[in-house]
Length: 421
Ligand code: PGA
Ligand code: ZN
Image (cartoon, rainbow, N blue to C red; front, top):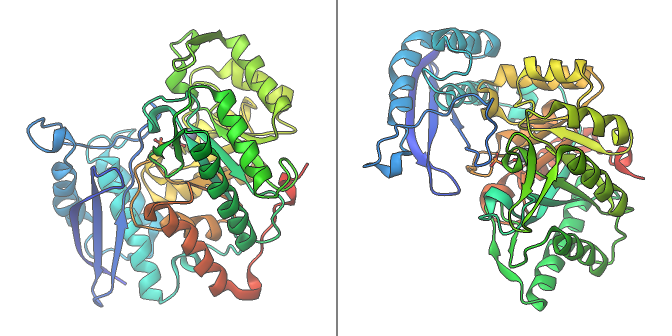
């Protein structure tokens, strides 16, 4: 299974911004492709997304240099390698780049090739990607956005994601059915209130409301009007994306025109988890505010899943520090935060070994690639966050899990009981 050709193409993501698709062709003619997503509320410690920065072309967002890097330097160094040696191939890419954050060749260039190699391997073995990536059979519990805010909806409300988790579901299919009911109920409720503005970047509603309080009300009403019990059958999950709210000393809610000291923000997060049926909280604090993370984890970490996204950026070194310091109990996993498939798998394993939970995640700028659906099942991660229940760059992931479930048949497992109260 030797690599014969490595090519790349500039394509466009779900926000219409340029991104990379890489293709690896093997000597036997079999091909695999990798499509790279892109974030908006990116963490400062993420691997580097290389863009051309030429204001006269595609607003500086073109990725022609990254594509050139794939087709010249990267191609020259991996041609002839065995594609199924993912770890060996990824270590060549990392060494070739030579920087700690993949800024020379671009993490987007490197990841596109790394994902293409994984796909080509699966295609050469004539198995679905999840079977070639790992041994897993666990279908993920979906975390699905109802309302979008923050950087994904021009700061109409300050919290980035109001999400639902169908923690009463007995199967993946049932979780999607419950989601369907609640998502459409939320749309109708916003419509009735005259507050349905449109859809945010990840397909959740872009509400014409300005307080987090109102967003909580809409979500709870939606669950009830779908005939489901909040907290028992469907619970709430938030991504605060608080790095975007922190100025180094205080947290700011722009839309509500309020600001909080770090201690006050810890109390606010704790209060929300007491007042509402919240089972998971992502990035409640900035990636530099380790003290608040530690405090909240000590106080509510037994009851509430606390996920580090910007805090850990899928980086095994940062995750290990977080485990040592007991900062959280879960890690958001995004391939393009770290830049290779191997390092992503390492991050997931490290998280699981510590007894923490990995949550496999999409980006706000997505593509039609369903790689992460396979990654979630292959690693028995147990949870998948893809944005909402609308728009095909999101649905392609939820639908791919349905196909995987069909493929696994009676081997498939699903377990939401850990999330029941
Ligand atoms: P991003 O948002 O892709 O814009 O970073 C997703 C998230 O914060 O989880
Ligand atoms: Zn996040």
